[in-house]
Image 1 (tube, helix red, strand yellow):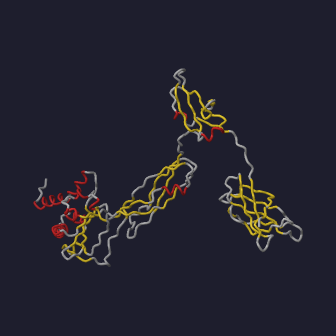
Image 2 (image 1 turned 90 degrees about the horizontal axis):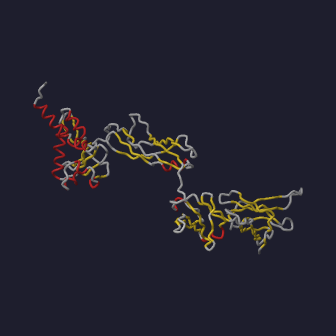
Image 3 (image 1 turned 90 degrees about the vertical axis):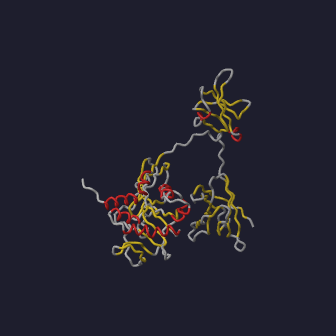
Length: 421
């Protein structure tokens, strides 16, 4: 076996010392290392140095940049000047403050938010090798920088939606953003724009959602990554928790001390007592208690509790007579033209009535045919018009009733208008 020379041994010892942060974090399953260092030099300049490059050079036997880091950064450490560490995950740490707090080891500050600062750190100079010598040089604006590529796209979680959920709602519930990592260790947040392939809100199953994004300024995609994330939207039918009918106030189950039969007492809400025609449990009729008409009783199996009866109780109500829709329409004549005016209406017994229009007659055409006109749609409570209304020619109008979305729900024919002055 070849015998190692003295310089080789020194090189190995030095490299091992430089790798201590990485070794320590590997033991804690955290792959976080020092990527860059920023420090203030003796001229007050903020200086950037590629620490990871210095380590790699040293591993290859070139200690020029690393020795310069020890010299220049050592001065900043000794004099308490601004000093920042940037990790390979893009985290920036205030090492100056950590030293003041007696924290010297990288692993002691990596998880402490006190030392985390928002980046990027502005700098005007770079510590680098120039013609085989480490120098601090001013950053040249026209200097071509090495391309920064996207290297990783972080995944996002899928979602579960209830059957019937529209495409728009499903997309709105997907994650709005994800993070990407660039080739110099910075983490960026990007907005996602989603599509869901072949989405059918009424069919249960898994659907593929694709979220695309735009690269931040200055980041390139020379590696040809697909600029998207994929996740799953699961459409499924959710089981609603069964409850008692709204007419039921409470259900109590108990066993008779005499007969040892188990009964369910079903108490009805006060406002429904006079309207209940029958109460059924699993299709079997319960008995109304004669002196307590609010209560209905039925024998149930031993061991039954009140929760067991949820979804099994049915209450039948006496059918209430259906009232015909009614309308009161009033004609408000114009002060100067009494055969012209406005119409207001009051509608009863017509659920969802919200708007109306008036169909009325003008004077007949010359050939004797009727001349029928309809107003635009107005809110109930507003005046519709102007309309022509001459009871000597035609004494009725038709009034159409609409819901809030202007869907026609009813038409009153041959309505007599009550004239008011």
